[in-house]
Image (cartoon, rainbow, N blue to C red; front, side, top):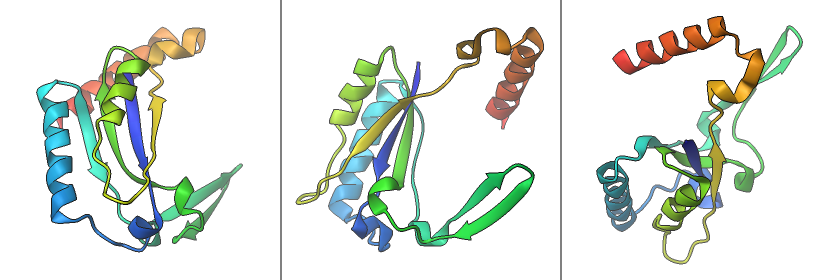
Length: 140
């Protein structure tokens, strides 16, 4: 099972405050643990929403909204994509994540939908196309 662990943004991350050397070192150790355990698929920090944009889809219309976005607590500051055996294991990994001293952080955990989760809607042709796309991505 694949899970995305998303660390929520704070007022500091939205203000562009970068982590300290100490926190970067702790995060490096955490990431190394994930790699050594063979569960890390991807992981990155994200720039503040002031550098981002949202694209609102409405039928055939598209509207671009430039950041920053108002509610820091609803934004994501970084993520890890991990592959583990259960949600409980994903929770255990999230609980091991370093937290900056004096700050309250939150990690949201969401399971990734797999092709088989779509049941009959994922026809054999759709499944084959998905397999082809995943192989192409893995080859890059």
